[in-house]
Length: 277
Image (cartoon, rainbow, N blue to C red; front, side):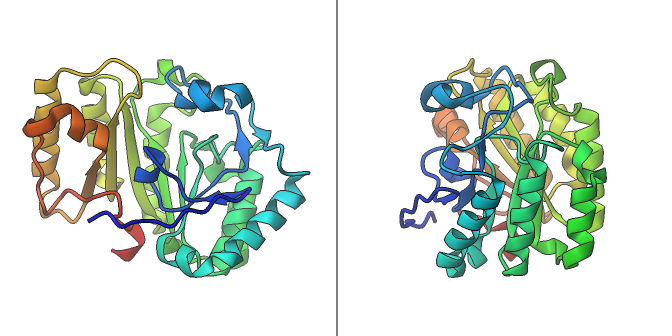
């Protein structure tokens, strides 16, 4: 059952609402803009469009990276009890793992969170950071409990729509490495561009993925309802009693209506905490 959340909106940390709130109770945004240049990106439209760029830019509320991490630490410590329960999600307004652009500040914040017993969730379309020195140094320096790190990869299997991101095959390989390392892993199968590619992406990730989050394209074309229902039923059945979980976002549930099938053993709601299992 979805629990009511108290509001909080700082410069770095905040409690997401709406569709973003389906992903995490708490999130951190240091940057706006992204060099992945995905054609379907929701940030390019609507309320984010006036600050969007094709390169990540530090938010104007921060003087520099040092100021950003100082603000993050202050806001984190002020909400530490709640954050230790749910973790912090990075990030809704950029890809937080772009080497030489966003990765370094993300890793500094992740290190600070882990040293304070705060779990972290990271969602990315990049695979090249796993060999970056800043990631390896962070792991070696703080010797983290990898079960407090959840690494997620957005999977559409449409590299043509994500020209600046790592190819799908590299993301799957990176997920495998994170899984073998001991991190929690999840896949954001959103947006569903077409059923066939989403189905293949989920199959590719299945051996290394603990949690799938599946949603429709915001403001885009909707898939055939019969095909979507078949996808829901197949993956509910595939994951049933496997220990792996799936969260069907509200966009899927609303679109299918009475045709949506909820399987208790495999389906979870938006309050599911990957760190509690």
